[in-house]
Structure formats: C-alpha cells, structure tokens
Length: 309
Image (cartoon, rainbow, N blue to C red; front, side, top):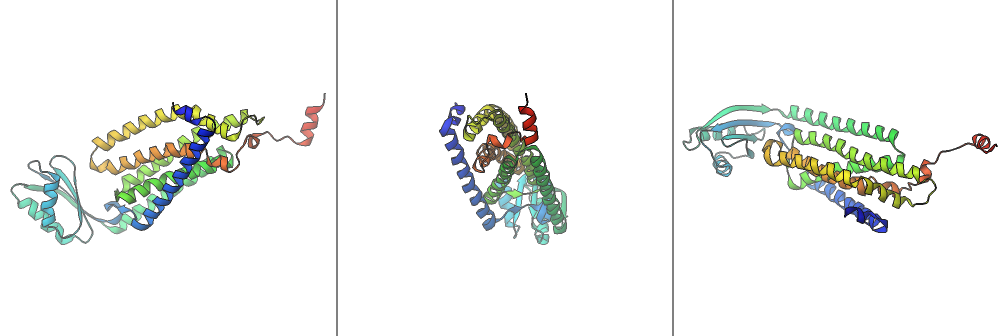
C-alpha cells in the first residue's frame, strides 16, 4: 500500500512535505538546544556515584522521598534491581553524602549497605566529552570522504545533510525532555551515524542506477527518484522494523542504565529512515540532479573514431 503513495506527483508532493517537516523539526531542535541545553550526566560533569543495596524490596519513590529529607542538594536515584540502587550527586555534595548514607543505613525499614562510593572529577568528565566529540567529528569526516568518492556530489550532499538532520533531532529530543546525556548516549550517536548512512546509501545507489539506465531522459528525475524509493522501501521497512524491535526490547528490559542509549538509538532509526527518503533522495532533486550527470563524456577525437565506418 505504501508503494502507491510514491507514484507520480503524489509521491513527489509527499517527499517535499516531509522535507519541509524535517526543516521545521531541525529549527525547533536547534532552538531547544540553545534555550535548555543538554542534561549532561555524571560522566561529563563529575560528582559522586554511590551504589547500595537494601535487605528488603523498597519502592523507588518511597526511598527517593526518604533520601530527599536527608539531602539538601540535587541527586538522581535509579533502581538497578529490586533491592539494588544507584545514586548520583553533584560535585559539591560531599557533606550531603554522609548525611543520607547514615540515614539509610540506620533506618530499620531500609537497612542499606553501601557497596561502593566514588568521586569522578570534572577534569575527567571534560576529557571524556572532548574525546567523544573528537570521535564524532572523525566519523563525520570519514563519512564525507567516503560519500565524495562513492556518489556524484549532489547525492553526497543529500546524504550528509540527512546525517546531520538525524543527529540534531536526537539531540533536540534529549534537550526537550532533559534526558541524561552520558557516554552510552554518545556511543548511540556514533551508531546512528552508521545506520543512517547505510540507509541513505541504499536509496542513493538505486537512484544512481536508475539515472544511468534512463540516460535518454524519458522519465523525469522526480519519477526516477520515486521509483528508486519504491523499489527499496520494502527492504528499508523490514530492516528498520527488526532493528526497532531489538532496540525496544533493550529499552523495556535492560533497565535504567541503558535507557538513554535505547531512546537515542530508537529515535535515530526512525528519523534516519524518514530522512533517507525525504532528504537524502529529495535534496539532490532540488539541486538539479538528472540523468545528464551520469552520461559518459566523449571527446571529439573519440567521437570521430566512433563515427568512422
């Protein structure tokens, strides 16, 4: 049924509407990032990380309320199991750490036992952030070099813009919802780069093949692009669907430590599939992509030899 939407002017109109929607979402994401920023986790900001267990099962909300009474600063409590918890504090919470730890240890209903308590300095967090950004920048440069060799420049630009679009939308979602941005989320962004690139290349390869076949310009570039998307749509949906099912399982079953990773990857797969159709394949059309870009150039001397009987 989806293939019918990609026929003729209807398919072209849908692609351009999707591209307009993408532009609006990118602008909203940039605005949100500028206003709210990212909620950097302990991996980047530094601070105290304490893990402890309780002798019996305790509700997370009840434990959080009890600790809040003995803690004056900001903290984040996550459940690693029925009786295993992890608490993150700001770097300035040295005195608060002793207060709430004493409270949960001495309380008979909780009877907690501290397993580990460590401090991560802000210098380490800054170094991790710099190295993570450097890794992402290196990945983007490698992608651009690969696309420059593989595709005609219009298709290469479309793939790069789609890639940047996916990353901005994921970052915008994390900024809007103030989900913790840590090292696992940064790793998911690198995975999104690879997945989005693969999806764009599949569509771009098919567009290139059909343009070469239609060197006599019988079909318009819009029709050729619609046919290319239609021929790869089933494969794209099956691949994205199975990957989303796996990521959704991680999101629902792996617990809080991998929740941010799963949310980022899930969002990246969805917007990556969308952008490979509405940006990677549509932007080159706006930039004048046609079958003429793949015509074989023949010089005058060679043409004379070909015309000889």
